[in-house]
Image 1: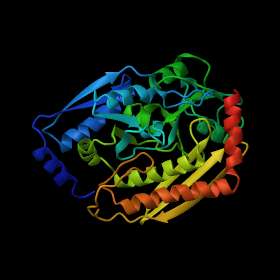
Image 2: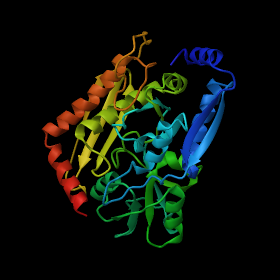
Image 3: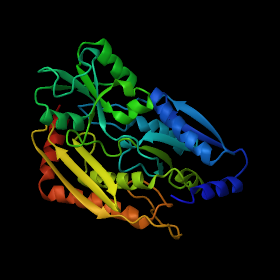
Image 4: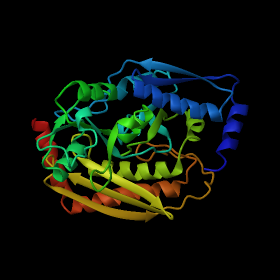
Length: 357
């Protein structure tokens, strides 16, 4: 958005000199890389501020096939935010629920990196694709979304849960003979500098991605207007609007990690396109549709304060409200269309089966 530089300069001139901004992160290599990248962007806007990064020992992001829980690891960081021990926290946006706990908001969504999933092959299968892997090859994934779509597309493969952070999963792939390949987010591999391990990129016709995948979100206290202004310069308008539509779609479906829900979004010539789908756990039953909406990103007019400026857990006062509402309505409309066509039954069965395991 134009004018961010002026906002940043004004904020710096008016703010206290050499102010220290405390940033929270988890103790993992990827989390630290992501946090460092956001701090570097903030330093470019605010060279007069100091940033201190505090590492917390909270659980690594994980997906449990039985309980479908994915947000446990955010709680320690939110506790630190609540107690004013840190001013902001950096997350992978796909790890943040569409309804945040009271008192918190996503104050910035940075420009999205590659949102697609990537296949990393065991060294003995380098050069292969999922299609050319031998019959009954075992593919590791921590996501019901990936497993459901890929089981449908590649019935000759077996999909099995693999746990741990990126380092752990790659080590399990390379050192154990259990997996022929694993599926990971391409953005995470890129941030770690492991692009050379990518053997195949999965495009939407093979595997649509998770809501918010590839984007970083900056979580702050919802009432901390100073911090909202400070991090708000990081909002990437296109990424923000795409992710609002995706999160609204997921929220209206009442989906989550325990059921396979996936999306694909694109913006072109003022149109926001959203494709969303739901799958049964084994991928045998599915439903997907595409809708579009006209999005006008014009200069933001100064409005008075709103009682609840959040949309799907996001606060972005420097992006036109009309555009945000259009994106949210697109997500809700697509979810409603799928629900009216019977998606609720697919989701309910998937949820019950997952709970029963």
